[in-house]
Image (cartoon, rainbow over all chains, first blue to last red; front, side, top):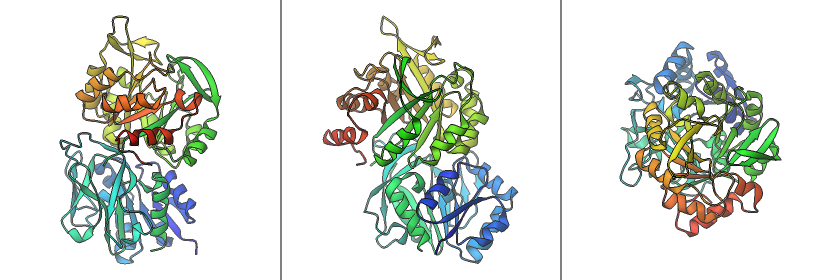
Length: 206
Length: 252
């Protein structure tokens, strides 16, 4: 059955590439900033590029924070956060100024700290993703496959059970999380070509 | 491990792609949509698309064109040329650019870099630093498609742009552009040593060894090339196979 995928528009980025990528894997994707429109989705995707405080303010102004909680937390619609859309699930972020996130995960968002070997921040480019064996999001994707990253901040989970993949940069960071019906990735599956499309297809098949 | 990136650069003028020498004498090399479709199939790491005459002609970015191209671009897409306001950055991101390259405007008004970085995040703000060497070897930063000197040293400009919020620097050599005799390794290295954001080297690639040189000796995070991919039989994938043999981490 063709899945209806709602892509949440809160004024933070290019949503067309996410929409196109979902269509490429056979979904009917639509971009919306209407809280009620999330109600007819089989899957909800929160993308995003940009600064955290702006993003939270935009979500709240449009009433999308409450709508997301209603459908994703209360009604358990499968959810995928991408990049900033992953970070927004944390309780708090330290980007620009310390600010509250959606708080769905016991986590905070901090800046990547350069190490002797990994000196460049932002982390831009292709890097490997070490997924836990059996993680449904990574089914059929080879171990340590490369995905495209472009970010300066990352999520630190206090509950290790939420972590489903890590990436070896700046001492290693959490690059994907999974908790019940909530999934999120720090990289950009919509720009990660073959493996990215496989991941989106897996999300549709959950 | 983070991979080094090999990035084809598409230079656009009027209705098609061009490639020149020293930022001048540009020849037509085809349609941008065709190029993007080919690079999709070839699984390239990233694409840079620059509208090379927009600023000189007083135009902003061609949003309709970028919108069309981005729709078919399943790889990271950096777009520049004619970006002069924060609204231009917003509009380009909205139609599908993943990163926006700011050149002349960043040099003339660094506040545009600060504002774009605060609003959209440093990771999508790329500043292009175009350099030319004088006869005595002293490098100088140029703006307006290489037509106007700034009297400034590339390292000073790089530091200023990083402090203003640039997330990546595209270091282009005007002297080496289109000549295919190697990157300006020294300028790339001086900039890479001075900043902590990634540096993309551009201008001068003719053979794969040039890429290895600027990655190894110039400490670049990525190599961009245009003439090499337009005018020779060499492909980005072959470049990465060569780099892998030389011990660089690449995505094959």
